[in-house]
Amino acid sequence: MAVRRKCPKCQNWNGSEDYCQFCNEVLSPLIIEEIREKEREERRRNAPKTSLDNFIDSWEKSPSLFLRILYKVCYTVTAIVMGIAFLFAYLTVGSNG
Ligand SMILES: [Zn+2]
Image (cartoon, rainbow, N blue to C red):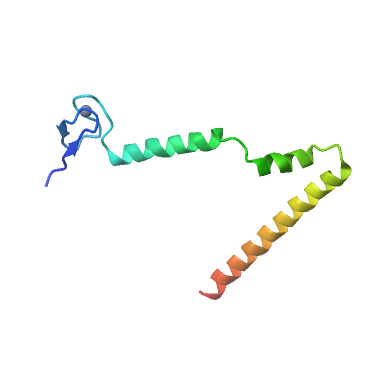
């Protein structure tokens, strides 16, 4: 059975073409998904930093030595916790086969 796609823009029926023969609207689900993925990526890149990011960033640039040390400690602890989590994940996968 041949693929028939109805153009969402001009409501005309097309065959298996990736683009509408009448108005050039994108009809291929793959291309639509690709465009959506690009838009999502663009939005992620343009997204403003969260207040938590700003908060932690302000520590790094803080004139207070205490906050700068606290930032380094938090950063190091996060790195260690991630390392342990990764190690556990690795061990779990390893023991199962
Ligand atoms: Zn069309």
